Image (cartoon, rainbow, N blue to C red; front, side, top):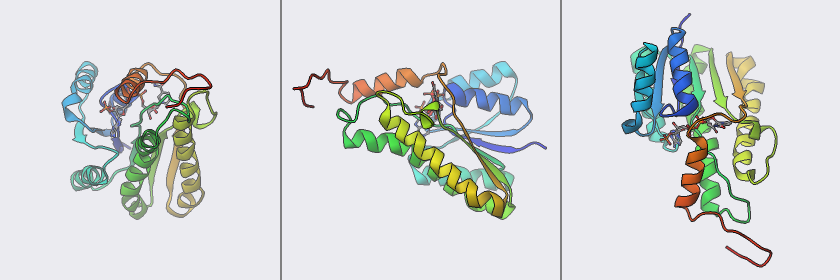
Amino acid sequence: MPKVILITGTSTGLGVQIAVQAAQAGHTVYATMRNLAKRGILDVAASDAGVNFNVLELDVQDSASVNAAVDQIIANEDRIDTLINNAGAGFVRTTEQASEEDVAWVMDVNFMGVVRCTKAMMPHMRSARSGHVITISSVGGLVGQPFNEIYCAAKFAVEGYTEALASYVTPNFGIHFSTVEPGGIQSEFAANVLKHVEATGGIAICSDTCSR
Ligand SMILES: NC(=O)c1ccc[n+]([C@@H]2O[C@H](COP(=O)([O-])OP(=O)(O)OC[C@H]3O[C@@H](n4cnc5c(N)ncnc54)[C@H](OP(=O)(O)O)[C@@H]3O)[C@@H](O)[C@H]2O)c1
């Protein structure tokens, strides 16, 4: 049976491909992004694949934006069967070099973003007593990686959050939770990491005596 699917972060990369393949499989796709001015790549992919999406604004760092998108889909469809938490951002800076603002931002996009979207969806899935929340984590959510501890911590948080929800929500309400742990994917991810690091002051070249 076709599902109503909400996908976050569909302006580039994996989100575009998930949206295309879900639409090709016959599902009703709500492809969301925080900046609708960036919908060009998605539109071209949809046109090339001969599929249609509903495109909505959704910023995972803004609860009002998340709730507005969910409300809009419920008003249109009366249900959301599947949430795909795909939006995320990488980060490379060691603990000594990362500011508290850096860490808060990485956690907000990658962990709190998942919590905000899941929280907005839960009442609807609970009353339907069905649903599936699929979160794109990372191999970095399973194995700590050098120079990547802040991002890994956010993805580990996603793993623990999902596992805990699955332990009691699934048996009581029939809502299923999955995490996906990709390795490297060709996308805008690495370029965005560099852009963010550059925009926030670069990476200090440290010796034992340097401080930041
Ligand atoms: N690429 C990899 O090697 C890799 C490996 C493992 C896991 N992952 C995970 O895979 C997922 C998709 O990443 P990707 O590789 O497709 O990278 P990407 O091309 O950089 O796409 C990331 C998407 O997330 C969106 N996003 C960022 N902040 C957002 C916010 N506040 N609200 C809504 N959307 C936001 C981006 O939107 P903007 O265009 O507006 O920035 C973009 O659409 C992420 O969760 C990432 O952690 C990626």
